[in-house]
Length: 225
Image 1 (cartoon, rainbow, N blue to C red):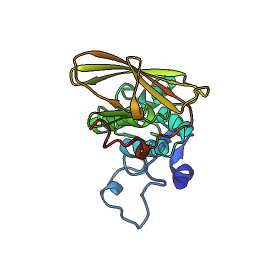
Image 2: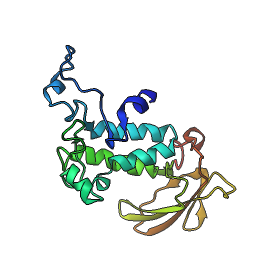
Image 3: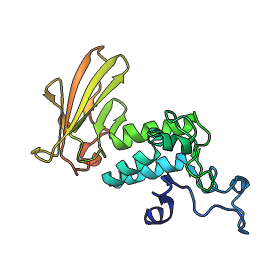
Image 4: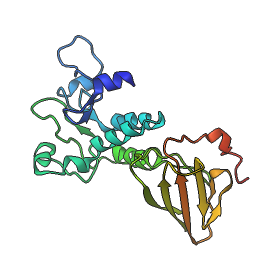
């Protein structure tokens, strides 16, 4: 990850590049990617699959500041937040692009848009890694990587025919690292046992910033059995 910081996170370009520099005149032959124009797709541009995995890795490391910063860099809506940005990006800022070009004169231009693979991974990044909503079977728990400046956020989670209205609240003043209630009832083991009862349930997750969930202590596999 130190090499990622040094070589691939390019704040000037606003890109998370797959590699740097691109393969162009070198004798090394990495395969088909050398057939792309330098800076396009896997040949030195931002290949969004890999960029998302990079942000997931920072979230896994517990680096919430970097996770938030890089998530903002790859969020397409931020490429379209100004007329100047749109003039550079040139594609739809409301869908995921498979790649963003990384070499002049097309630096920052979006490539193949409406790319469902990147969209699927972006969804997982936001829900699983950033918001930290984790599910295994009928077990639901939380490992947020949200900024400390965020007081709360809300998620509507649908489990089969049942809705869970979830609010994650964080504050350094909380006595416990994490507490979870469903309809006012404390949840044992800090895990929600999902129940498809065709009802709507209100979930409150109180989270102390900086805490990392120990899933081994939570005993995920045995919970609810």
